[in-house]
Amino acid sequence: MWSNQPVQSIRRILSVGGVILSAIAATLFLTGGGRSGFDNPCQPGETNCVVLAAKDFSPQDGSWNINWPGPPRRELTFSDLEHFTVNLQLDRNAPQTFSRDFLIREDRWYGWDTLGQFTATFAAGSRTPSISYPSQCCGATGSPSGTPNPLVGSTFWVGCTKRGRVKANGRYGDDGNATIRLEKVNKSDGIGVKGKFSPTHTVNCS
Image (cartoon, rainbow, N blue to C red; front, top):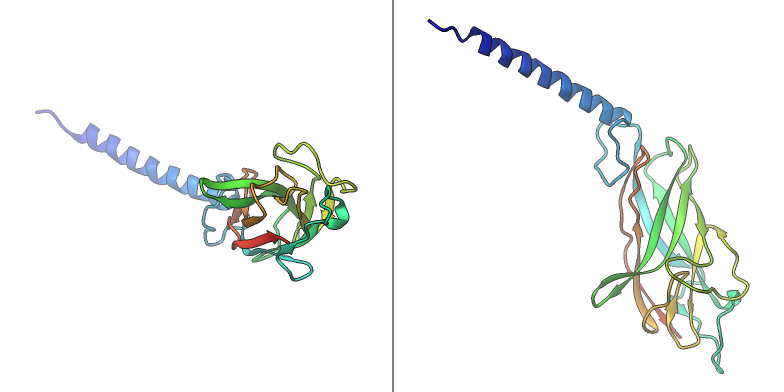
């Protein structure tokens, strides 16, 4: 009579192997081997995952109205621009130095369009970043005269073009009003950063 003992033995081996592989996968995830850097939830005990406890921006002068130079209307210069303070803060100290790009996005009728971009770099041990904002990005062909490249610190700028259109360091929008937000760009570097969108705010050329 045929015995099923070999089959049972194979099943036991496969079962034990599955447990071992699951344990290895969990260990790799918690120690960084499986961390993608995307918006995965932070796991208990994980040391290389942080949460953006604050993600917002606000005008330095307190007004969401953007200066429209003139009349007579003229091309933008750096002194015309409205500066917005970036408020990004981690829930704990950064385990190592890392950076994330953030898009400045406008809510258009067909979806979210990109007006600009900056890079936020968190130094090891810090909770707030340094912001690097290039003078142009994202298909732009020019920038306001006198604009630093990059603007480094804690702000980004938005202006109003001669034709009355909202403009960041990318291509200008379609009119003088824009509902905008910040959007974190995912990156795979061994650090998990949870949190992607800021609240929306509306700016106006005036």
